[in-house]
Image 1 (tube, helix red, strand yellow):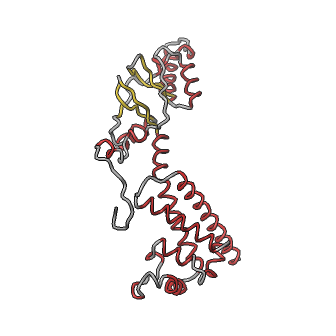
Image 2: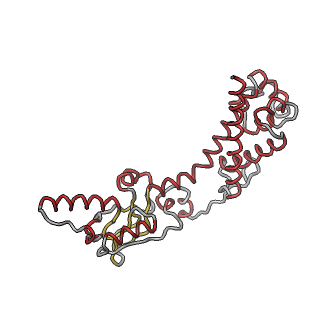
Image 3: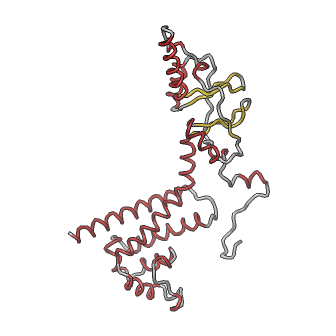
Length: 287
């Protein structure tokens, strides 16, 4: 238990389990990834059809367990241009449909280890759109730019949404009244929490829970009714839901659950609607 009475996250003494806390290449490989490969003798039309079928941009060229290269839209277009130019120079017919994967692949693809920091491979992935994971005789997976983008989005999106919500809440409170009124409301709503000489009177000095205490207090709700609309009790309940999820996220108490993520996303959208409505009302009053 920590000093607040919250249970601490249980961390295994196993080094392998602890290193999983860090964002490395093995974290980015999609759990549901199925390795699809082609043989070097595969004609490019069949390989391109395979890419289209699975929505891939590249496919490893493999014989047995040995990776010979990587075939992709990028390598295909590069070699088609090369062979076309050679055919023109030598005045011979270029038979595109007879090309094999072996003739249009990158024979020296890049291999990352599962323990590598994936940021170390950004330049390669930017240039080639992917990196193979494992070794030429033991292919474990493929990491693409989109895999990294999805992974980073999943990791960062709760923090981003909480940041949006907190900034939007401050903006709505600023729309509701001026600094003097805020100070007066704080002294009414937070008097049981702070000594008068330590009372926060500016929004940036307050905690998220302070915001809830002020916005959700029936004695000052009249200031907020126009910008938040709806019911005070319902508004406070939504803000409390956001606070609870925020505490889980920022204090790393445990992994956020699906239901909590959905609550966060729904309440973030609710806050966005409140901001849009408040801005619309403000513009209408200014006209």
